[in-house]
Image (cartoon, rainbow over all chains, first blue to last red; front, top):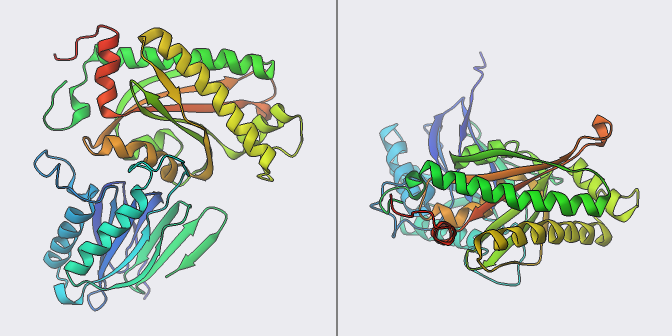
Length: 165
Length: 214
């Protein structure tokens, strides 16, 4: 019997985990990065939609930890482990970090996409979590969906159709 | 305004009214200038100023996945911020058609279509900011407009980055311009989203003599 799964939606600056047959999705990633961590043996995956590279300045102000690359990754790992994942089997897939507008003034805010991608990669490297696939940068928004049954990350862009990584 | 916790939690009803008035005055002038440009009667709607979480910002713009055309400009000067004029692709097409007199509209994404939309952005933001400057006596200028056609979540999140350093919620100053003269399929409609950078709120309130600390 094929069990139909549900789509779990992750909002901006939020995170969540799913078991197969459910899939997990986030919509309208621009400069934000969608991070997927998964345990392929347990068919278990978590996704975060991060907006900013690091929480350093905001750590004690009671803000959503899932908004920042560093604290989102920490919390995703903790949630996956408490759901039964093995820390050492965790792998990552990434999408997002676009630069939606081109400006002559190269202010930090305008370069936030690449900075988010760099922060996610640095954090994952420190934690020895391999990145198996990524679709980052560019100038397009992305809607992504991960299926913990197949470990496929589906990426949709306006006018460029869908790809799978 | 409270300095601890979430920045956006500390706004008083009076302060929100001031922000609503800013949206009112700004888009009122923008409506007049659009009216003059297109020789049409343009109406303005101010649905109000809301403090909502980031997902709800995208919902107010049609949903994070929805494809929209946006004209983005930074406000610079005494009270920096981000300003978006957002329309459905069919609306962008109508605007370009009316401005250029060409049936090509925006669908071909030609250089002329882009420059027509940039011109539209300059006219609208120019009117909006001039009204804002007169009202607040602050100095404000807008940058060269940047056009994107993409998912509205991807577009508007650019305007939330500054705020996201200090808050999990946004104050949405949304106003809409419409022309309800013609047939339904010929309506013109576009929406302003104004996101002042966090320190700008205090400058706006002070300039209008509104108490900053409750």
